[in-house]
Length: 307
Image (cartoon, rainbow, N blue to C red; front, side):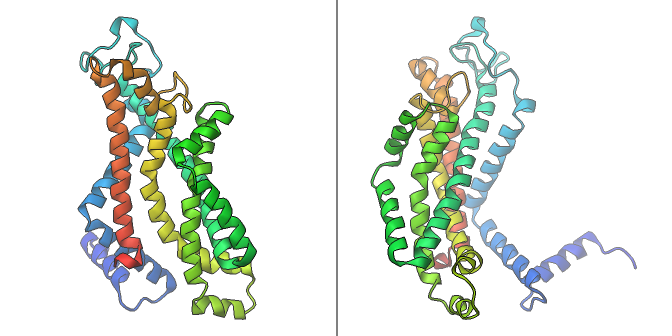
């Protein structure tokens, strides 16, 4: 049998994904994913956000290869040197290369954001689904605890938690996580209150499925799309909170090259040696904007109310 040309294989795959009569559940699932990707790709701003986020992740992961200097190396003879002359983005007050510190700082800042999301998204999802499905005293108890956390501004509450612990990256992640989960719980509860009245949940209950099984197999997957959108949109506020803690000296501690810490140490030179504070500020702004654009695109694709 002669080999199928590449163009013919691509057309066959596309037709297989877009068929109106899928032959299996797997084909139907992949078809839905492909249609979601096509809808997402039609949004140019969302594609820009996706490309920027992926680029920043690649740059930070490849920091050892792309950095031109050791981020902690101090050259006091090159203090506050402007961009150029062997230093792409200049140097800071201790002669450290800003470009190299920016790359390694992205590892810390974005790593903190990813760690917070991995902690708070499952907690908020489980709390909201259990509260919405169980109802009664469990719902009232879990939602009152959620209301207590929502009553305080996120940054103020994070500052209080960090102040009670030792300042550092781990403390900042825990503090942000403790303040970031309530909105996810509220969103998951609202979705669960709608899903639990559907016919397929009633059918699962009539077949003898237990409450935990119904929540894990039938309710929780229906809440995931809305949660993914909310998490992506919240990435920017988590970045700003992490940078704010670093700026106030309660997050990553010097000499770690975290973006908020870099701005804090450079605020004395912000008018004369502007590049020292401007570069990490641009990085924070770019990351926040990219996640917002990506979240808007995902909301258009995943939220059925937007279709």
